[in-house]
Image (cartoon, rainbow, N blue to C red; front, top):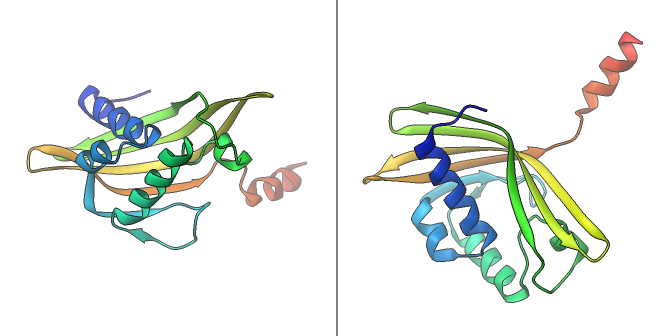
Length: 155
């Protein structure tokens, strides 16, 4: 794992704000000009903060964590959840940084711990003295269709 301690601390604070549905903390770590792709929500780019403001407000009301197994199971009570960053790699270029990793969202459910995962890249820029996330790109964390074609071709 390669990481810059300053960026790592910022990134985990940003992600914890999302986990906690803490809109105020989310706004301090996220640019108003945010652009993002969330593959499981829509195939189109989402711009700005209103999308997540609404999502986080509704998740807080229901006690849910966005993207977790509890969210997919339709559970409506606050369940224990945590995140981990697998294969974290941070690239820093002055006042710009890119973090890429597999986000693991673990949730304690009645039938055991379930883990949802996807790959993420977050672009952060130091603006007005503080870091802010300006772009997020998420993709599924499962084998690409080409992987099975390549495996068959080599068998």
